[in-house]
Length: 127
Image (cartoon, rainbow, N blue to C red; front, side, top):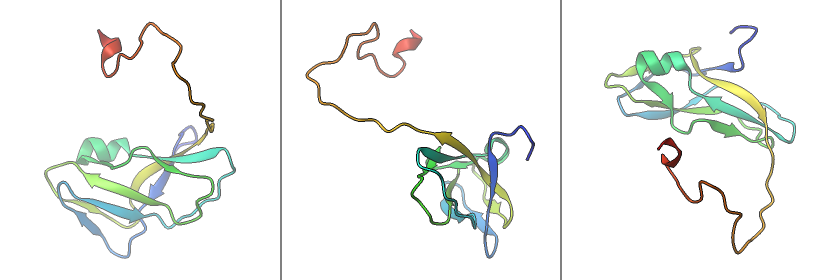
């Protein structure tokens, strides 16, 4: 919406408004398809205003559009609030950010290089 925004807004392309009940989720069509160059993805992210004001987010966030996908972009929206939410046709429902990615080549190893963290997992670095 602004010249310095990282994300492009995605809009709901619906035949009629859709009521999303509390805890409900739905695939919302956007009416657009894109062709990305190899090595790039489109990340689909929630809109902060919908999250704050209405508890609306995306189930898989960020979602990824791969460079070989050519179908319509759909957004999986979820209602985390305790009130129904109406998705209106033409409403901004998500944002799309483009990013380069790297493909990894995996190699089997008997052990890994030691680090100070080791195998300390969730919350380990906050102590």
